[in-house]
Image 1: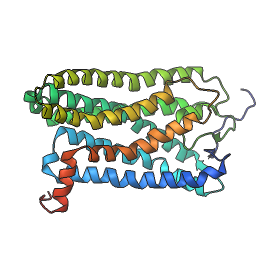
Image 2: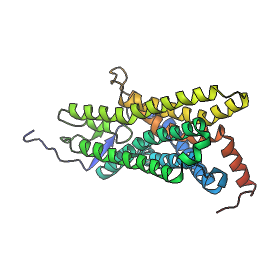
Image 3: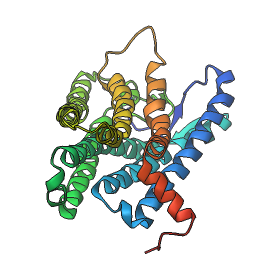
Length: 312
């Protein structure tokens, strides 16, 4: 590396789909609509969960955390993407790239753990209904949520530090819409095998282990639900879990495809599209899934609109 300039660039060029300019207008519309729906949808869930006392339960406490996470998640990337699509110079400052990398990674890692915590809550609610209020007490809920956020940000500190320490040798064209670890690793002019192995190991910890816990939880839940004699009771039990399962499938399916699937030489744009899905589309769909399939949330909206809820 002697004689090679390894200083950090002042800015990065985010290529995105700049080689296909005809895609920019459709992408701008999709990003803008998705972002607006994400903002209003998740703010609505946070507001209704706070305002309606009937939703002051562990389930909606964790759902509020998920909505807050999705708000910050999309805000860390989408505004910059919208600006770049409209600009001829599709750049982001070095500091902006570092902030984007850290926040996106931290919140993505937190969501992996938070979805597992939410499955634990559903397991206790259905498999231990008589002890639910004793087990899922307020202190435990706060501890589980805090552990998810702290672990997610701790992972981001580690991953971001290891990634940003790599020499770039003047390279500054990021073949992506935003600053993400796999895209930045491709800029390095040194061997990144160790970083890729470490990223794979961390991905297993934050993706496969929580997903395994979720699947085990739902195996017990399914067995408990099938023992319920009433068809209405089974329908209600499955209804409380259906929304969470859909969200889990959307998020983990795309994240695993991005971080644990070997790169495909025949589809260099696959990673971009997958990242857009779990980084933009999934956070937009989450509030729609929870509100459209959840009678409690829809009922709370009606009570608030009709003035039947006393605001705290």
